[in-house]
Length: 257
Image (cartoon, rainbow, N blue to C red; front, side, top):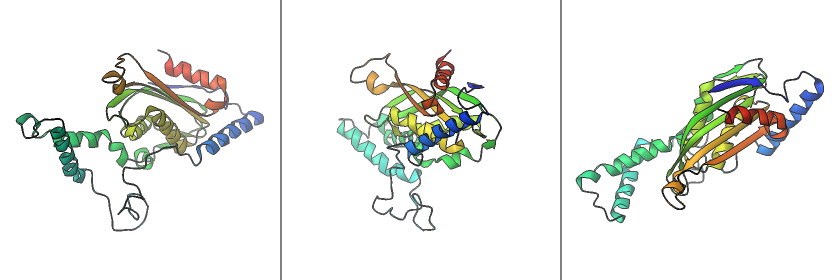
């Protein structure tokens, strides 16, 4: 669901309010230190991994070495799943489990496909100059991710709001940004910030707000086994962080029925 409405803090043409808004945005950029959320995983294979120091997967250099394709990872991952089945006391050669290691490997690669996606490719130039200075909210974006602590799913809904500053983003791209960062091994707190930072980097708005409401299977299937518990996290940047009225307007739109 998408809503566009008035953002109270940065829509005035008065010189004083514009200066205040610019100061808010500058503090946001200073806080983010080049726009990256702390703990952002680049990829499972980094430039410090042996054999990948000069890899084009990590650097924009004209070099020969390239990372294995996702499909090339399946045999090794399948062997690992086969060992896991054996460790559980199962017989990986019985009929019902013969193809399970390969299926599980393919499933895990799908669950973590966000590692092979980047913001520039996903946006695909769907950024448009637009004289629009009112709040844009897209709410209830379905999200599926994997808990990095237990390798079990968590899922929920994401609501994103931003206050444009001369540029707007194609609405479907907000959902695709959610996919980039949710389809990884994650914690909900980091995921929330990564989505907000990505929107900030994409269109340099006056502010970004993100709320995620998630259900974690590590709390449902194991541990405390609380099936009705939900985790709510938020990240507020720019005017959403500094102006109470703008923040309250977003929360009303995002959390209202």
